[in-house]
Length: 216
Figure 1 (tube, helix red, strand yellow):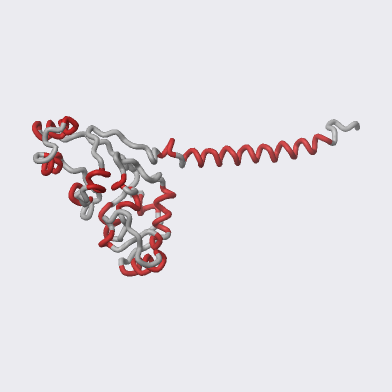
Figure 2 (figure 1 turned 135 degrees about the horizontal axis):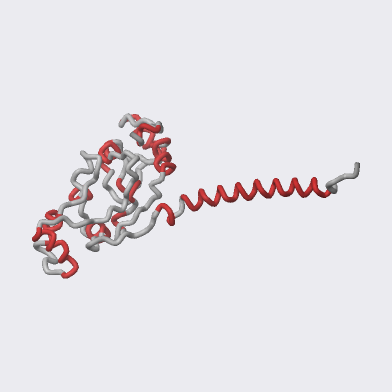
């Protein structure tokens, strides 16, 4: 019986299989890269707000502590958005007639809250509690970046599960003393590995990586 396929068909089939595997692998890798890119996660993207509130000015220049505006960050699952009255504590006296602050004054006069656009917006299926992270020594800038250098707030990190797990698996690489949680530009006085290992023990920090920790 004559041979149907030429001998070169064996080589061609092997090359085709290798090419197919490389193509599938490349497509999977491309999907992972795109899924972690700012195009999908919106990381590093400045968000326009109803009033151009500058953390660079209020925190960096004026030295206002995070807790003055975000009053519930240490006791609640939410950091909280300050009411208009908090803004007016200062701006009833300074820049009281500035046109850029008219939405603030109108909100106060009409007793209607401003509709701030949430920047760090986790999916509804994710449970996150601010207070427990503060108590365990996770600094504001660890998640939110150097907000004291942001003219407009942006999402510093991807907020994807892999990013959260980096800290949950190795908390000693990220935690700091509770007294330094709100310090921007904090630098540990000793190597982080040494300090972190001590704080993990002192604060009774556990490497929580089970699904139910964040998905409840």
